[in-house]
Length: 376
Image 1 (cartoon, rainbow, N blue to C red):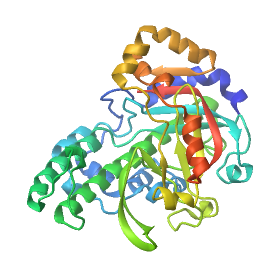
Image 2: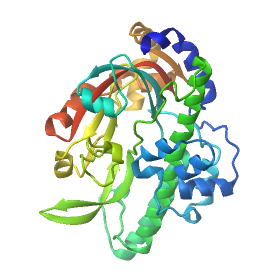
Image 3: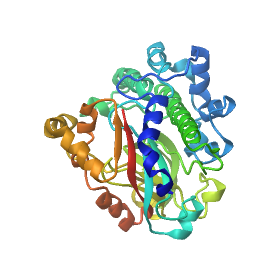
């Protein structure tokens, strides 16, 4: 409960900030070989489990069990691997964050209990990061290769970032394998951070992860291409579903859900800002009709990073003081990042989530507010 940890949050944030590398170009603490990196890229959370960074429950409660089987590390460029090998287990910068949160409101008590949320003021932790520079380089490499292939297939697009090739071509299959490697890196990166978070909490509170009930509710991807079956014009079809800044929100009964969540729907995490709130929702049937089983990944920006810096950096002390008055402690790699991620730079998370809720894409289950934030 928040009353048990409130006074310890500043010191706890210091420990977390020390234990989990963050910031632009941040490097992880792991010293792995390129052969081990290939194992991460090919096997995702299975590698984390084998190497003591994950529990069986973490695997069960992760999208695709944290492992895309199409991955083939041999297809990932040397440059991508060189950029990624030192970053495994790091938060990165930009909108990536770690948040210690408290439960502010519970909208559906029965479903909340099945997710491990029992009462208001309960403490939760949220992690937002991904495949870091390795994923960025995989994207860059793939974009270049597919642009070249488009000439062969005589495809023209209005914007180079819409580059595409026909499904089931060698270029498409190679891209899917490379992207799966990046996804497996992202799943593993978040898991290692979760492991170090558990260690930080255990160290501070002198309790085991089990006694602290430090269990994973769910892990999702938010920039990914998935091949899924959906109904289109009354016919079931296999589709390439691109979720960019979106997250999966499958409804109850979907075969992809873990057994203990099958009756309630897939948990969907929708973060807001370090000064507002985040939501834990579950997918609803309308999502399959309206958005191919997807919902918003977060509140979305109102202003660019450069505009946010111009707006908030000159008064950064005022910004951090206002957050402090709300009971929110912050540890950040730089004031620039705090300015870029200022609450005023984003849309109203309550309104954003309410839209998906009202449309029947998700159901709001729990509203979470930050009390401690680590920013890269």
